[in-house]
Image 1 (cartoon, rainbow over the protein chains, first blue to last red):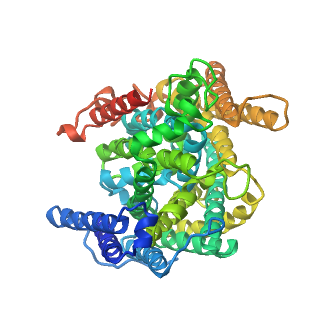
Image 2: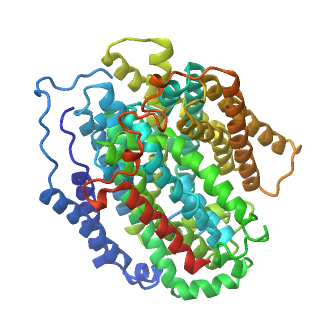
Amino acid sequence: MNRLFDVRAVIGGIFVVYGVIVTALGIFDSPAEIEKAQGVRINLWMGLAMLALGLLMLLWLRLNPPPPVAEEPAGESSDRDS
Amino acid sequence: MSGLRLDVDFVDYLILAIYFITVLGVGFAARRAIRSSSDFFLSGRSMPAWVTGLAFVSANLGALEIIGMAANGAQYGLMTLHYYWVGAVPAMVFLGIVMMPFYYGSKVHSVPEFLRRRFNRPTHLFNALSFAVAQVLIAGVNLYALALILQALLGWPLWLSIVIGAAIVLSYITLGGLSSAIYNEVLQFFVILAGLIPITVIGLVKVGGWNGLVEKVRDTQLGDAALHTFSNTATSDNPLGANWIGIIFGLGFVLSFGYWTTNFAEVQRALSAKDMSAARRTPIIGAFPKLLIPVVTVIPGLIALVTVQGLGAEEGDLTYNNAIPLLMRDLLPNGVLGVAVTGLVASFMAGMAANVSGFNTVFTYDIWQQYIRKDRDDKHYLKVGRIATIVGVVIGIGTAFIAAGFDNIMNYIQALFSLFNAPLFATFIVGMFWKRMTPWAGFYSLVLGFLASLTLYLGYLGDVFAFNSDLEESFWGAGTAFVTAVVVAVVVTLFTRSKPEDELRGLVYGLAGPSTGVDVIVSADKVWWRNPVLLGAIAVVLAVLLYIPFW
């Protein structure tokens, strides 16, 4: 089996993007939106939380990368047959 | 604002679009790692335990589950917790500690294949066919429910949601097989939580924290009973209408063990783990989030009960099933709203993808390879698996429109589970621990157990048998199926020939195969935090402790 990419990269990537978008919204939330959320700056907090989760995933991947696969020689690429 | 329509804006759609693109990207990237059918159907048995564990819980965290459990929270109160703590955690731990050595150690590809090796081909064919049919039906239900919710929340026409949902699931599974299903399930797990947590947080702020919620729930028609789990269960006089025997044995033993330990759509996640220890830890790691998921399902149900005027209507926008969508509408500003919509969409796709990836594996390995085209090269089966995925999804679209004809989808699913899983669990548990059980005993116990449950179900529908509730019927149906299957297994064994012990090595407890001796089942991994028995014990103890404040 070819090396499958690591899922932590996917989770980290999408959560960093979500975190940035939602945090940015949270900074500029209108009073009406904050009032809808019962006075909680939910976009700001959830944005920062998602950003933190994303960065933690990427950090984990960085500190603890998957072990190298030493298997059969990687020659052929995958076959198209669908 | 009228109806359930959410006030979504550009950013919310952007968040949803990013999710769709990511999911498809995972499919394309996973495709590069697929060379053999084993890569496609079992991820080449290469996944770490935390990935398979989260996928295990995510495969169950379909939107029907989320929406249904929030609805139950609003309707029955904290007794809904039984579905998590009695009704899931012990069975998940049992699967990891006791059953996984047989599944993983025997190197089978699927649950039906285990039955073929333990019993015979008729048993195998019966189970493979019934599983394949049930998976396609449930995939259709998920698809239909997804379309319903998108119609209500976003105003998309039904057919559009069905086609988009089906096309995305189809693409990523056809491309990347089980690997991309599992990776997307892990991603979905986090997105679903990110979508649900704000609902609980803002909801609790609105009702004045936990104490405010408790006070307000006491004032509803459910009253104080909604705040207890066991203290009213000496009789059936409680919101759930079940006594403690029904809860512990019916829900906690027969229904839950049947679902978690023999449902291949779940077991498949563990079979893709990289080694025995990871496979055994898969359901146990899944048990820990399962303990806490009620915080984002049952509690929002209660919040909806006390904040949404008129919740609990028979039909229209205020049915219990709309508890979560109504809270999304009332509480979430744009931004987290988009994440919540994405989380719901993700959970439908998680449920459907689990069905589809279970279906294509069983169809290819257990039906096509066994009964239609034997001994072809591996590429042939890989191709069949991809075609089966496409066909399965297309039939799923068809069954989505059939599901549109049923008014209570959840009951339809519960009925399917009690019909198929309870007798299967009985057959399994006897077959795994009693080496004399004969091949034909396996077949007849499965078929007659199924027929017993079916008789009860049809009798209930046709008013021949009376039960207090659908729940009571499914308890009795599952219980009857279980007892019938065990009795038939014993009786038929007395009159037919057992398999020679050599053929049962690794499949039956006590016949020292490479992986199923006592030493393996209680064995310790080198480090304590990777020991399945210890982790499992912690999960069960936590489940018991969590009950204490809600007794």
